[in-house]
Length: 245
Length: 191
Image (cartoon, rainbow over all chains, first blue to last red; front, side, top):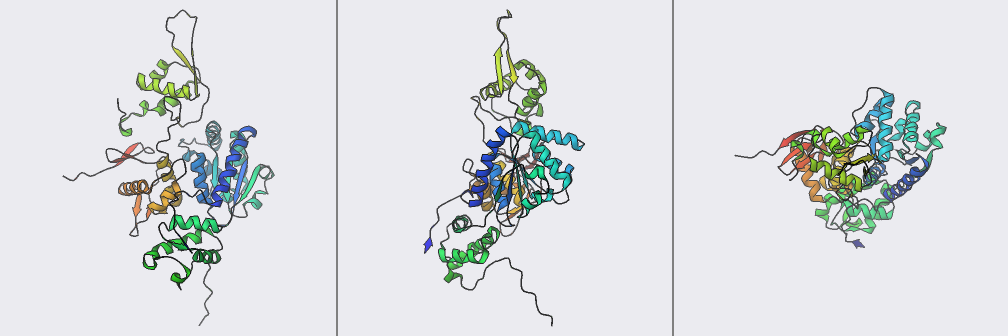
């Protein structure tokens, strides 16, 4: 069976995107009445967390910051103020007040991507302080172990309104992704089924394969298991170790 | 009078300046006081005050009983929404023009490497869809202005990060970067 594709031009139909947007939207209205809370978005690398965060950021006009491992409290605050286009003050206390004021007044949520890098004493308590004082919703997006890591800080853990688990792509997501990446190419359901089997629904790997399919489409016409033949799949597995001679 | 291009407006004559002044007052003020504080025209100041009042950000009331025949309206900031100047029309509704560019720029900053087609998809929301053609033009112009590097396979890499505000393509075929407050590129006219 082959499908012809309608023109979808947003990533909204993807399940992780819908999931995160739903949770963040309800968290925003909850925070408005009850004070700031965290939404923790966790999942394995390649599940499309960053992409989902970007979409949600555009929808709710949040401030999004991608955290780094080497950051101190000051670098985090500087990055947040940079996103707000506010010239940063000289010391941490003043920068903190600047960030709190802008968050509190604008009511725009703060989205911290790669938040596992903040899982250290210095940063985590400060992030909680930002959230408490500004009463906005703060989204922490990170790897699968994020929730486990946050348990160390009781005051943080107790303020997680909802843990949101990023899911691997399902059959419907694969169809949506195929429409986005292989626009105008007929992609067979059998090929998509095999793609699911080979990648385990890891969105990043799915996309690599879809990009290859798009490049091959000119030669193959339609993409199906039969035309794909022995072209192989990108599965992300490391090659087996070679034997020493 | 038509609005001047962004680079020709003094920073004291913008809505940002009006908004900063309103926040700095910290007390009720009149239109005249606001105008003196900035360098905006009477009509520009008036328009913005009407919009902000309609949006419920300012409240306006007329001083009566003082014996003055036409007392000035007194404005009070009731809903301070932060450093970013609210973009409002006369009727108080929000201006969302430019949101697509904002989304494109933000998406570029996240992904660093991308094709213009993928960029359009990732930057689109239902409210503010970004057409593939718009993404293509924005990428090509930013590449000419030295923000992006174009690769042989048609993808781009972001090589110049100046700040969170999207560089603007002006009608006069030049690129203005609001983060730097300057023109960063002009189309070369071949003689």
